[in-house]
Image 1 (cartoon, helix red, strand yellow):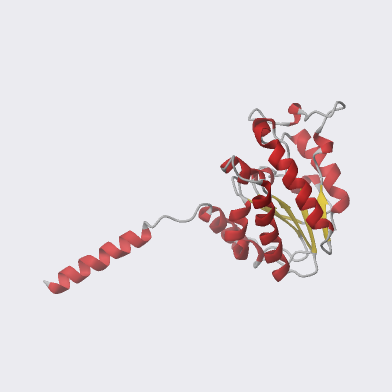
Image 2: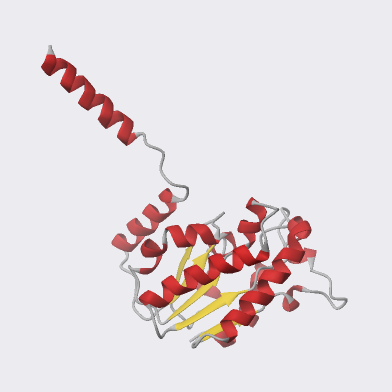
Length: 218
């Protein structure tokens, strides 16, 4: 009877463990690992890290045909997620440059979030990058002003300003400001370069990003 009970408890424990809730974006990270196993990532590439603006840029390589790009954006991610999965996002690669786009989802996730908190989250991740790659180029793309998130623009503008000031003081680091290029002649954010959700970019929007980003690429 004791053996049967023990076997039952072990079975219950195994089932419970297998059904344990995985961290958010765990599947995305596992998919990156599978992709790296199937296609070993090239050395000296440009590594893109961040949220859906990178995830949905599925044809990014065609915008930069003379560059080797590794896209590791995962949609919905926040800077907290980049920090949580920093080792998984950095260790498998030997890039010559890292470009980060992340931060707007942090504000969208918590409308009361202060700019200073997002800036600190970024600085924490930047330091983790530098622990792995002390000398390579590390660049940050400014948080875009999506029409669907207009209520959050003031915090986003403040965060952009402070991250830009931080990056200016760091070696081999640049702040890539895409906000002006996304405005019309009157200084308003162009709605025509966004998809219907007024959050993600159209191909024309990515063309604008390409023009701004390209001069920074190694």
